[in-house]
Image (cartoon, one colour):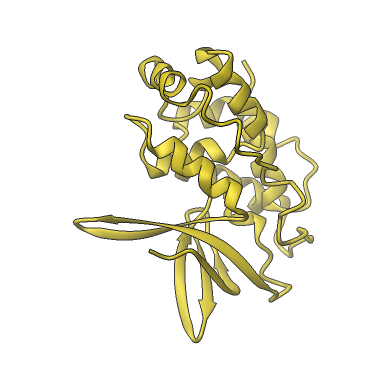
Amino acid sequence: MYEYIKGIVTFVSPYYIVVETNNIGYQVAVANPFLYNLKEQKEVIIYLYQVVREDSLTLYGFTNLEEKQLFIKLISVSGIGPKSALAIMASEDHSGLVSAIESADSAFLTKFPGVGKKTAQQMILDLKGKLSDIVVTGLSGQDVLFSIEEMESSEGKYLEESLEALSALGYSERELKRISKELAKTQGQSTDDYLRQGLKLLMKK
């Protein structure tokens, strides 16, 4: 089992990043790929969780150990797989997630992709009282490894990439269509800005 990887991020897509170390590129699924800045070419440490299936071996990456522990807690819930857990963690409001579980707010939990009423109730049943030891700063906290700089692509590309990333997280075409007009009004300087705003819009009632 891998604990972490230290290397340079050489590729970013809506679905994963590639981290190169010792001339080998490792594909790592992360909650927000556009958090990572290709321009800096700065060495990063990404904490890993490996999932082995009959037809695949996937590495999931996190900016700190607290995020990794939250991910492990989420996938322990029946009905939540690694992809769903990553989609839940893509929201910056990790404290809101913990609060919703502690207060048995199933309506809040069903806003996440792939989480229906039954799964939300299972999350509350399985995790209530078990997350107090996890302090998660979220993707915009002090443990973030890159500051996002303005990229050379246009705002239209930022919007397109952010919608593709949200789709990769499991949000439906109907949900994305609902927020697309409002999201297009974002005055962002990167795909990361648009993705963060999209997640906020999706979490609104």
